[in-house]
Length: 287
Image (cartoon, rainbow, N blue to C red; front, side, top):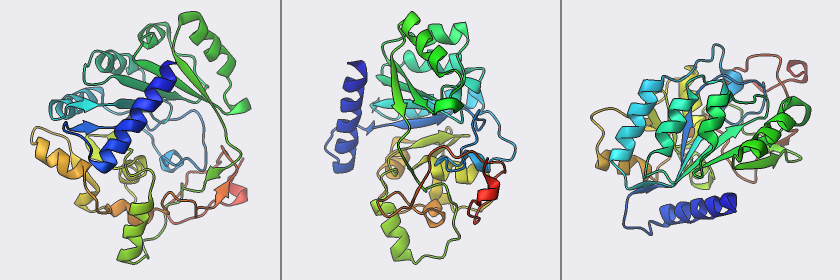
């Protein structure tokens, strides 16, 4: 029931956000990237994790400061989505969970995990909260602790939701060379279903996880319109201008977008190599 209510609430806020049917300043959802590290090596990860040569954790103090600054300038953050990488790799996750669950402006928290790690006892204690849902994707044999994690949730009354892998994934993890026209890039942004997945990563706010990771891997030089820095100069007006922005951002030039036109790939293909921009995965690169 909690999962259904959370999903319905989030859907309504996203719809209101798109149509600007509101009086308060509401961010429908925010992805908080705890770490670039992951226990899986999915070649087609839409968050671009296979491109990180030396993945690092996010800085705890910076994340807490950034969240405080954002919350100070909005009326509501409908849903905080905590992810990575694999968020349970991040050893200071308890501090994030404690902070987020104590905020009146954050009614819903979702932690995304791939079923490879059973969290430590203190983390389990912090997950037992009516605000929090643990969303577990079942990667089959790759989710080596899936059954144990489900049992842990049941024994500790942790709200959880299971996501089964679909038959195919969007082929959306490619970083392409920017050769499209301005009109075509604008169309990519307008048709994208991920442009409201606002993402907080390494002190900056982005329109989507793709744009955040593309910036973080430091393989291309992105224009300033791709993100805004969250620091003491942040104002409500500056945040609103970015959140409600209707123009495409620079990372769109490197993205195939998210639409029905995308080709499909087998889900959770594991990579043997570090991916590079402008290169398509070859069968020899897959496990």
